[in-house]
Amino acid sequence: MSSHYFLPVLTAFMSLAARAAEIPLYDTGPSQDAAFVRFVNARSSAMEVKAGGGSQQGTTLQPDHPASPFYPVRGNASVKGFFKNASLQSDIALRVKPGEFATVVAMPGSAAIQQAVLRESPDDFNALKVSLALYNLDAQCAGAGLNVVGRNAALFENVASGTLQRRALNPVRISVQLLCKGHVTPAKLELGTLQAGHRYSVFVMPDGVGAKLLIASDAVAR
Image 1 (cartoon, helix red, strand yellow):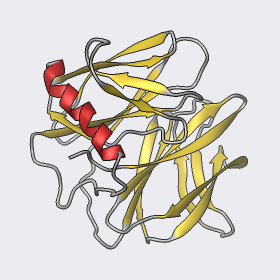
Image 2 (cartoon, rainbow, N blue to C red; image 1 turned 120 degrees about the horizontal axis):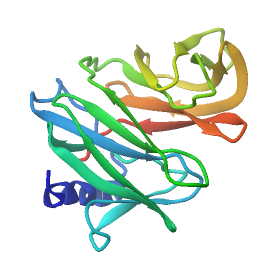
Image 3 (cartoon, rainbow, N blue to C red; image 1 turned 90 degrees about the vertical axis):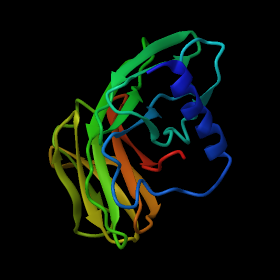
Image 4 (cartoon, rainbow, N blue to C red; image 1 turned 90 degrees about the horizontal axis):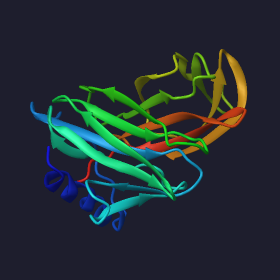
């Protein structure tokens, strides 16, 4: 895929960010040849995401708003670009299969920008439920889980590092606490009021000697 095709997709995020409206992932499922990619900045400072050469327009992912929406791309086409943070740069190059949703993460760290990619092909849709995923990207947090704060309820259990799980739940306002290997950690996250018919992802990220949680809406840029 040429950067001429990918550039308008990144530019679309600029206009999307200016609007408060959240767009559900899809109503009835993606078309057969559709593919989607988003970018997440898990580092402690702002990260540029650009397509092609440095003179082309892109977007900036801030630590307090670390995730882009999903951008539609051609299935099986080459997606190219780069992350840039001050003097550090990391090229992006991947292919996304039709029906697949790929998340490219700029991982925490002070040295070279390391990337992680997780992929899923969701086929569920329930207008009355929330779809929530747990992405475990912390190699030190084996068997990651999420408990609902203040309740004896587990949302996720035993999510291996480098994998994800997704489940449906009722649209309620909750906070969650991270477990690693069945042990409660200090990492907590207020998820807010999750909307029925929408999809969200919680990310487990390394954070020094511990772990941190990030949440992102799985909205699509249109």
